[in-house]
View 1 (cartoon, rainbow, N blue to C red):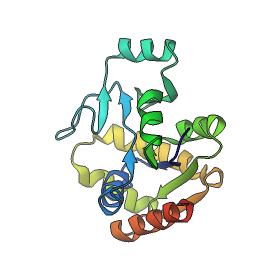
View 2: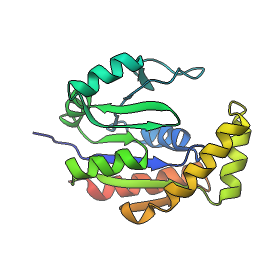
View 3: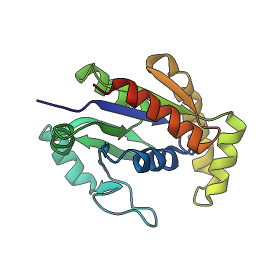
Length: 185
């Protein structure tokens, strides 16, 4: 039986989810982060099993065929999924944060209606574009695709339990921590 609660975080590419979640995790040592599997290549400084499980497309398909994912989705021509076994293991020890795209979040909601869905939104589309360009690792084509995807994602906000604006990392992190604290027993 699970003792923790599941918090599903979504947000547009470039909104600062990783930075905000690092702050959240540093302020509550009792939270666990669910690590997703992906077919994309690691970015500099990403660690296998910490940031993602980096798998081949063939291995990913095998995992799908074996029903090893709570949810999975294609995003930007790459596959992402939440391995069930590691998630359930972490939930036996406490609250778990999961970082997934909206389609994955909605699929999780179907299987885990008790999950709390939180969307991290940018202060504006212009700020989101500035952040994407500031990364320095994103092509013009990728920026265009990610901004188009962000438009669709922003249309999904009503399906989330909470929407938090990332206008300042620590303020955003504190709002998420308050949402989690409301769920503590």
